[in-house]
Image 1 (cartoon, helix red, strand yellow):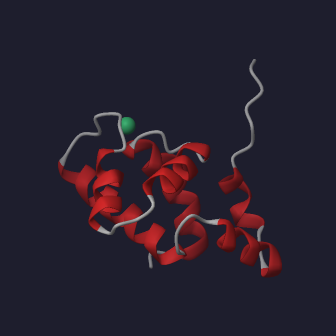
Image 2 (tube, rainbow, N blue to C red):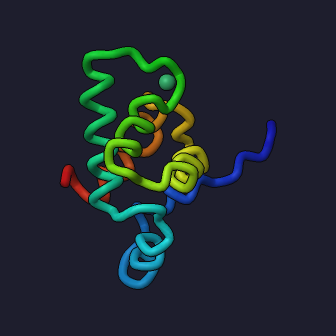
Length: 101
Ligand SMILES: [Zn+2]
């Protein structure tokens, strides 16, 4: 079995206080912006199939003029290789920690 590097986001649940602050500081965008991105992708995938790219994530980033190289690499590092993976790998952990807003 290949060694799979532990995704940073898997630790999110355990973080609090200064560690959580440090995590939030390390994010490529504000926490609420990433929550909005997840909501946007979820809405789009409700009506559309994932084409196994980050097309809806990218659209959100462009519409909001976000730093998409940074944000895309953050998504990839955390298992979000395409829009449906963002929902599968990142959204549940993110929402468990921060709620829906
Ligand atoms: Zn996909």
